[in-house]
Image 1 (cartoon, rainbow, N blue to C red):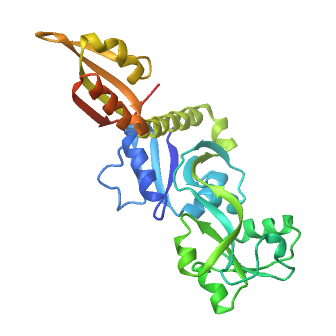
Image 2 (image 1 turned 45 degrees about the vertical axis):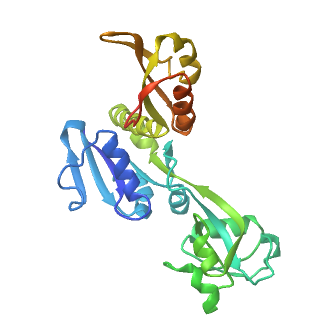
Length: 289
């Protein structure tokens, strides 16, 4: 049975999604970039490339079994999806944004009838309803930032990553509606099928191994035997460092270990202090624990 997976065909989530699949060992072959669907017979998998906004609907309808899209997109679609795994990329926040020179300091300052331009009409409508504000939602297809300047809307709601675009357009945030990451989503129907569930979990685990590896480095060093007692405190590794004898040298051993990427600088510094030489740090593509 072939399981279908949806990937954003462009935009902020596309590149990283492709990278995760490739590093996980899921080769998209020479047709990638030209074809909108790629079959991978060895894995009983078909990958389809569609708009991120359409993926929740396709999963919910059963057109595909699982896929990668943003939590913001899933929330806007209102589809009944199952979160399989948070992929921790594409992080952003969906915010209420006002003109820089306005007197609005908080959502409570907004009055009934306020005009809100947004591409996320469902999330925005529900949010203002929860706040007890009767907002007039102005649907736009993009460039919401210009709407207050043009007089089309009083404020906007939009995705924010760094805030640079807001500052350029003389806008500022007054509230966060939700935060969003790219996630792997499926449906109750797909996960109720044992074969599909097994394949979805298998691919999810493969992607997780890539995400785990991104936070790690593989360290190798030649260490004086007399310093072995200090090595474990410097590079404890996953289950302790691996120690290997070096042919023809009884005074030096090779030490290998996996360390947190953020600790690499300190690990190398501490190894040098105990006389280690030939220190190498290497990236890891996958780490299965």
